[in-house]
Image (cartoon, each protein chain N blue to C red):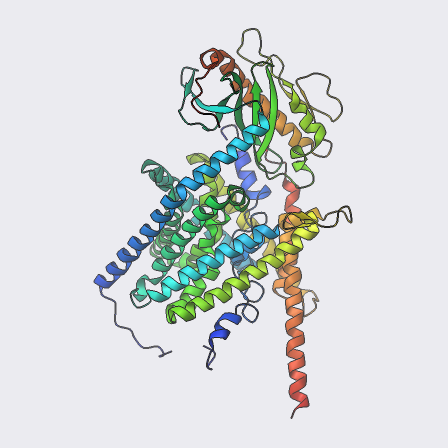
Length: 193
Length: 228
Length: 213
């Protein structure tokens, strides 16, 4: 993977293989908090930030696991570190900036069970990314997640004003919208070469 | 449900006891499963690779894993199926070819391929996609399209007289326009994917073919220890 | 739970339909969509998740008096992650090909909200036998739902079922169903059907109540 430029890794993670629309990672917050544009933007920001921190942590854990030759501890240590990171970030933000903490509110703890974070950690290990590549990958994945969330929220805000049959309203309509978004993201394939 | 009764705070001792206890139990479980399945997993991996080798280099009866040292020489790794490169020997122990894994960016994501290099023909003689996420029905035709796979009966990879690079770089051409033996007959409708395969093979062969040819003498014959 | 006596069969059956994790609670979406492009993948994923559900449900329920309240989430995550690691290795031992096609999604069972949700909401408050039945029911519901999505996607997208070709040359396959967007569409379709069935059920119930004064 040495020949792949940082730009192509970024584009790949953000657009071509968008975490939400191509890998279905982080679907729960995707449908849960995409009803309003404002919350979607905040959630996108929070997830991107945690992704970056988790990516760096996962990289160092993987180094450690390779040294002690214990690949079977990977899943359990990743999830524990991600859970602790989220807690730590939560405490830090509360201490440093109470205003931001209030604005992010319940979204921070929710991130622990966001499969996109664990997915990111596992994928970067599977692909054997080095440190800078891993960071770029995390940035791309975060940007892609935020983009998908914001797009979805924009569409759903408009959809609320439309005359939709009672039966289709709610989750089913959201899934159709997600399907169409996913299809349009397929058009990005071929960019990252 | 007893309602919102204030529960007494848990003692630190019972917290430690619970966390350490659960940690120990989980550790025990993971290590037991890992130990019991390790042999089967290794067996599966070897069978998978043996099958792949049989497909790309049918002449090989046994294999030898090698690795590149820093001064550009090949060295035995002792493992029978060491990726990314191993040498194949026929029934009499004579070197017939090398099996190499290579990867590169396709249309959607990384493509990983396995190919065989023949010392007699100076050509790529076998090809198999290990891993790809190309569009089903379009890009994944590189795995099934007969005219594309026919490229790998003998894809020329002759070295320059100096022996440090390919004489003709491997390139993908439009479907039906293949003239020279070093050209890949592409697939209409999967242009980018077939071009990606050409690039992957060219990059990999440019690196490996000179190394292989330089070291072929040292590994020409191998003492057969077992007959699979 | 619902203010009435719950029977053993109810513990099991509720997961299949009334509280179906996928179609009704919309939990555990990420594996449900990501690996349901063929029926066999869907089945394996469903069975693996069911196994983790049952084992973690049993352990959490058996240890419920041992785990203090403050340390419960971290303990549950630890237990679940261990069983997932075990499943990961067992599947690798059974078939590498299968493990390859499921990719990293086996590991992602850890963050399936369904499992942590059941551990927290049910297993930590009930006996081992009831927790097992509940996990069995939820797992069965999850597997069946995954299988339905997988069957639809495989028939339309690859014109086959469990890898066996169905109607040779009968129709042009809908490639979109195998692609990610097909997962969203298949899911939306099933949600619509479930909504419709539920609406009809409540309507007919309302009618019978009116007719029997």
